[in-house]
Image 1 (cartoon, rainbow, N blue to C red):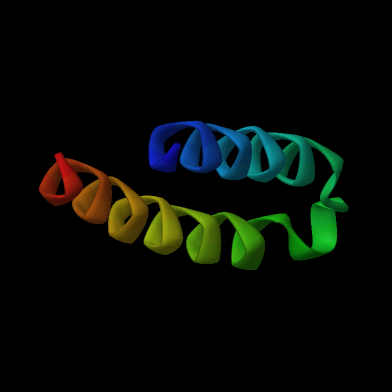
Image 2: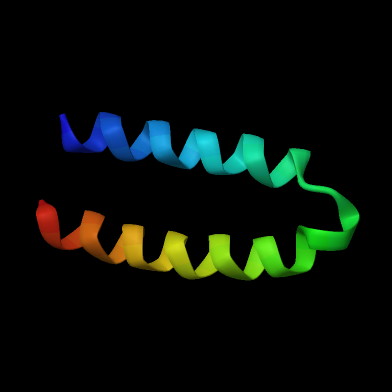
Length: 47
């Protein structure tokens, strides 16, 4: 259940990341990278 939800979140991030405008892509990528690290960290320790 949690894995499915996280997979959905990552898919949404990828879609949002690809649709970001060039002006905000650098800032957005930084935020996404930080979020991804936290999500992966939680994902590992949930198992």
